[in-house]
Structures are given as C-alpha cells and as structure tokens.
Image (cartoon, rainbow, N blue to C red; front, side, top):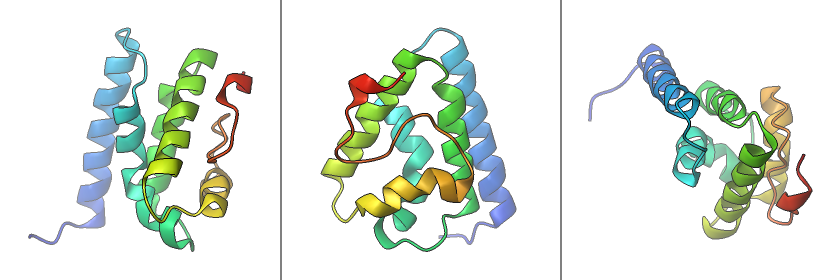
Length: 120
C-alpha cells in the first residue's frame, strides 16, 4: 500500500465531507453510515485514548455540520450509541472526552448510556 501523506488525507477528508454536506443540504437526513464515516478516523483514539488525530477532529466537525437540527442530532446520538455498544474495545470515557479534546460542541453526548430522546 502506498504511503499517503497527511496533506492527502486532509484533502480526501475535505472532499468526502463536502460531498456529505452537499447530500445533506439536498434534503437527505443524516444516516448512521454517514456518522460512521465521519468517526472512522477516531477509532484508534476511541479504543486507546491519548490525543485524537486531526482527521478525527475534522470528522467530528463534519458530523456537527451534518446534524444541525434536533432530529438530526437525535439520529446521530442513536448512531453513536449503537457504535459504542457494537464495536469491541471502545472505551466509554474516551468517547465522552472526544468532543472536548477536539474542541467541538456536538450537542450530542457520545456514550453507551445516553438517552437520545432527551437531545434538543
């Protein structure tokens, strides 16, 4: 596999994010596959802690942009909760700390035990 530079990853993430935001603005609601795509770069942080990568934080920002309303945030919450409960090795404390470590206020807690119906 070819060694991909950080600049290439950033550009690729930007293009994917742009496509996802365009799709969202054309009337598509957010889906779990979108949430998963946004957070895929965060998997190593979610399992091992430390500091999240730049692509991880960029994905978190993209998730925030794709879920501006209450319904989208509740859907994103359900997806995050599902990911937390189904992917082995995700540390709940790491998940809870991810938004603050990236400096992103999602308006959605990332936790195995959150009540997503309480999201406004």
